[in-house]
Image 1: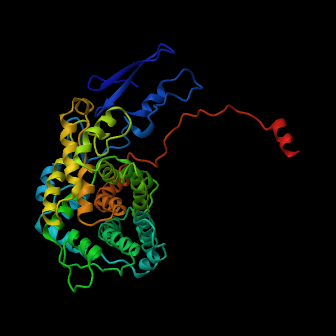
Image 2 (image 1 turned 135 degrees about the horizontal axis):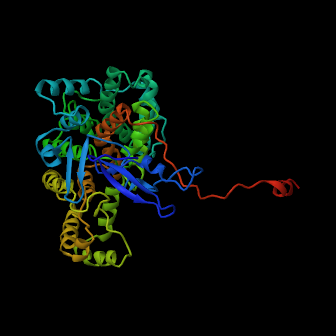
Image 3 (image 1 turned 90 degrees about the vertical axis):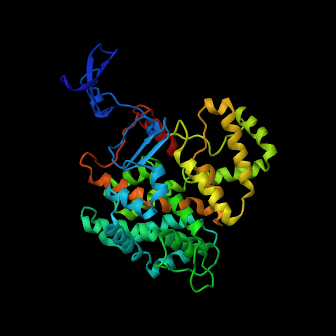
Length: 435
């Protein structure tokens, strides 16, 4: 390609041929397809970039979430996560992610009422859930029921009809707490508790989880707000594994229910949605404050991993971890102090004072305290990824919608570097097999 004086470019010399190329730089990136011009001859397909797990490849242009891992910055649509967690509700943040701007008072009331009006699920979905074995993992039930919802709303396939697309986005945000709570109650053989539209979004979820024989469930305000904050902290996180899956499936123009089911399946994996459970297991294994030094010594010797520390994106502190630590203290004032908290606090204190962990930029991430909080609130560990999915749904949908409306996007189809055998033929091998 030829560059003009106003274009930034990367000058590349191909040592195989001696040819020099100018590769344009736009927004701090080169277009991978521009590498195709670098060839050794006419029969050459052109140069590919090889990037397993997308460690340094931007698959899209996005205006939703900004992360600066070196400085510990997380912003939704430009707003710092600290301000959103302090001043907004989860539904306000969901509106922001999907609409690009915060709602005014009238818009928020309409948005909230619309969500409340779609919290109930079809009675046949209850029968579908009843078909699962009692010990079925609630995340497996959630993945399945999200996919099943697509069969109840055939018009969800009309993804380029603005009104229909937005109506199904609302339905998914409204119904995922109901599906999640029903999955939990099925596992414990409890009757389903229907949504209470008088309650807030997190309050209604707590109602569907814990309501027993009382006529009206009234959630503790501190726990209700704590859950709201936790959902905000998980609402989006740029191009993570499940968001990438949501976009990839959406690129085939799949409906939002099927796409969300695929994203939830990615979140089901222990490397993605199971990190806070791994932290709890680690803290329980340490047992007491006195055992913390020995645990850290084993980590430094490479014998075990330090769960809940470090992050693939954040090379400084995780801004969500600071917020969640404050939430933990508020929750424990209501539930009583989780005995694992003392172990966690001592582990954090010693790790942050140890040059080894500081030099390796191992700071607490959002998963370090979230599991302790969920456990204190009464959630079984199997529900941890389900809670993650509830919070992440608006982010998934924002990513999905942005992807399908992006004119630069096509159906996702990565290239590969083939490393298998060259052409070969059955020949004698075929005849010898037939004997």
